[in-house]
Image 1: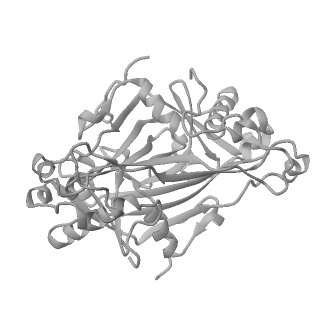
Image 2: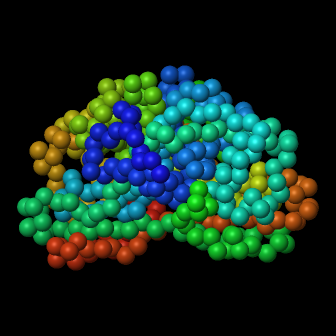
Image 3: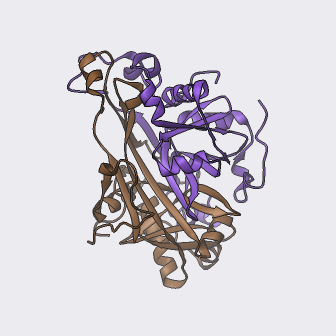
Length: 222
Length: 222
């Protein structure tokens, strides 16, 4: 895989030591996240909205109602920014100022492309595999009316950066020597609870739901 | 408390039934989140970055290095958008198209104000209380050099919207009748793991870390 190639927008300006340049690390962050935050400019103001996404190779897919102003705007090919953040821990330092968080984040810049036909279907497949792996095969397929009511966009993962903080407290030497306050890491865990079946459903919980674990949800190899 | 008053930017255009108008619901989402996604326009392009925040009453505080381009830009008073998203569940429907997520999200629009002096210190206090409640009292306080190296911004919670989805699968009647695929909710849980003490620290894990639970971290009454 080609490494991430920095452009001015995707070059880290702060904490450059936290930057990662392997494309596999970008894929790993995107695979583990469940929602992204989509940023675009509407009527001159920035707007940031949470939304689902999918990935297939180096294409990121977004979708929404054909009536959504943000989707309509993004479909015109204006600049967008898509950010996915995974929180791993709160980092407690000996000084208030050195408190931090451990995280993995991916920031993608680009212009989205409106999809139709087979590409649109492929995008919906990737979005479903990401949100609910196994559902594309298990649930009722998308019909023509539903296809017409959804906008699917593709964004190339060409201009992206990844940032990771994964170490403990980085205190000043004098604070370490003083040993006067607790320092360490409080991990943040995300997990799935027990599935809750709809009251009107008599189908047993399928394995792809019962055995789902937090982590990479996109099919291996993608 | 005054209810949330919609402006064109903060009026929901889609799924209006998911909108909430109580200021207490805005506060609840902000209290439970750990990071926000800050959106602004840099060199004509939208940029979305994850960052910590704090809240005191109807003021949201942001901070960052004085060298951070996004903080420097935000400090000039340009429009920003701050979004906090809490994911509660993956919603499996009988059709691929009706799959969804349960979530609570807050979107705040406004222009940030650069703080100094006592206001700046109050902002740092609120930011610390949010990231690590108890640390302001326990850890070494911020010194003058550290104060000079940090930018603290205040954003009024005047223009904000809250959106909540908290129901099960909303399938088409024909799909419910067919009863051919599983439908239900897979809850997403966030929790803290066991604290990991720094190797060079001999201070025992304090109660504010050991007993921390996910949920509202801002002091009651704020």
